[in-house]
Length: 325
Image (cartoon, rainbow, N blue to C red; front, side, top):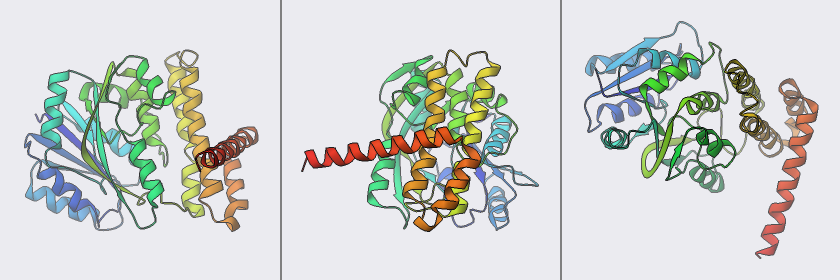
């Protein structure tokens, strides 16, 4: 039994996955297992990870016959995991060599359910310096202990830390319990937010450390860079489904009223992201069709509220810049 299980969903990442897996195989802590879930790739990704698994027996390969999405790939990885702790690494990212060794020591010493660590942000060609700085700030850990219900509150109401699950190491039993509650649905966007809600709901303790062990390529996936085409925008808007799934989870636990503020902010932030992308990342000629896409996923009143908020925030930003000029 390995002490850490690293779960790597793979879908059409032939240009990145070998670098990712090499970073895992070369960890200074050798007692790990690497679970790769190929989500019906149409490129050479499966061929690559299968070849690498023959060179390093710690690599396991699970193949999906049809594409099921990152959420289900991670769920299958968690079900397969035998480690004491679980880490998630996207196949176009990689870890620093000492990541597992250091984080294992922290988890053993601190006896916490989740430890968040720092991220190095690698900007793609379509990513501006401003966006890169925003992402770096967004992924910055909260260097304090947080317990119980305050974990969800600290993330979604107080913005103390992010909801990504890849920049954290998790207690395996917590992961198995949380992912057993995740619905068997294909989700294209906001799957991290959805999974994090359930993980944080069950977690008893959080700790953040500043050391950077995760390397994140920004601008490769559906998040894109500073611009989006209509296809990527549609995928972003499908994040509304994550809000619906999170609501169903809280209803099933009879705690929707108890967590009403956290849930509303969870839903709002997905909506605000969609409105921001529509206003700032779509080409002007695509905004008419883009608005129709918004209407497919959100109610008119919510969209109007999101646009009003975006306008208010924009005006406030302009006033602050003038006052500091």
